[in-house]
Length: 387
Image (cartoon, rainbow, N blue to C red; front, side):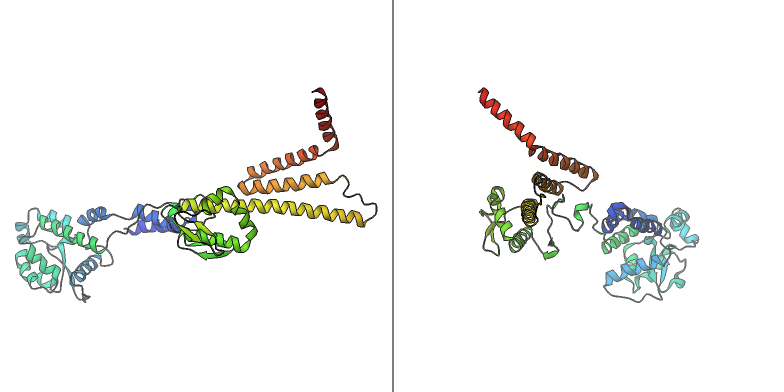
């Protein structure tokens, strides 16, 4: 991969606005889009001028190939890169190789025409028949192989050896397994009511009221959630058990029972998505019950406080005629709390809640007014008299 393309990847990683700021997801997608596969690598190296690349890339490639074959680390500091077909052609090379100058220009510095030797000056631009005798006695397996494999040296031999060496490099440096990724494949934290495809995935942790519990399976997550609910609010746990839908699914074990800390046996033979749906349903049930209980308790406390205040202070008429407004306010509060839990925190939902709040409040005030009540009573009496 060229430096220019690497620079583009680095710049792309710095753009936090893309992929939702997810650095790992961005990196994988950039690599997948820019990383050459085996075919592209083969096509590129077949004709690339490797010898003139920076950082002694040709020598590095040959050393890696040699060490991979011998499985030993060899000191090649004093070794030189040898052009089998020399860079300066003489008459003998032009006679032995058809279109020698064109072949040298196109393939002379490719990987297949290069090898390692410590006798570069001695061989210089000698014809292949003489070089071959030097190669036979070389301590470098890459160089010996040339003499053992090729009787003649020309375009076909260079192309053949280039392909062989590139295939060997691909085996040494296989392409990373960069599969197609989606947001759901990236590890992260999700709330229980987020829509996430968890099929084929395993949880690692569940956080409840800032308490973190490590988990390995969805079954374990379900048990921890129910144990936490029991330890934190046993009354709410009992109310949830009374829910027919939840009780029928969880508290009547058939296939894969599991025992909670309080001794209750539950069913755990569910898919990941079903377990998450159960946890969300229990969470919603618990929240609704808590809201209603809180509203009723606060309303009762307020009424009791006003009653005692009216008894303690002479001529106090604070409670007189005000009960309907207290009832309307408490009921409206409870309804809005329930709606707010279900709706997203957007401006439209807040506006909708405000409209509902006003409508419910005035509806209760009208329904509890004396004139409205008297009208209803008179209407009922008139219908009875008519019948």
